[in-house]
Image 1 (cartoon, rainbow, N blue to C red):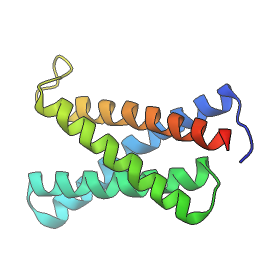
Image 2: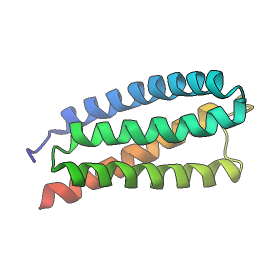
Image 3: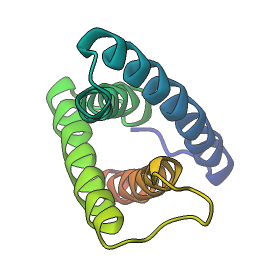
Image 4: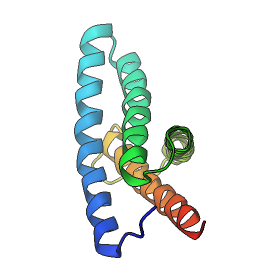
Length: 126
């Protein structure tokens, strides 16, 4: 894996934030329309969107063997969704976000970026 500069990593993380929001919103809207149930569509949409997006990001960001990329994408998704779920259930919310949607999205994105930075530093040492 080639060493990335801090600027290059920040650009990739910014791209991650923008594309994760777009991917999430599109998948949720499509699944709400497909299932006809708002809660079920949101739950399925979030899980599928983040798993797919983190896997694609792993191939773009890590550039390792395909199995390592798949495992890294799945692990980041599980950790980020678990921590975000705990933060949401503990009542952490942005003021004015009554449903917690944007709070959850922001928490998930920030936790994912921290996880990707940890993985990058671990892979960079090898």
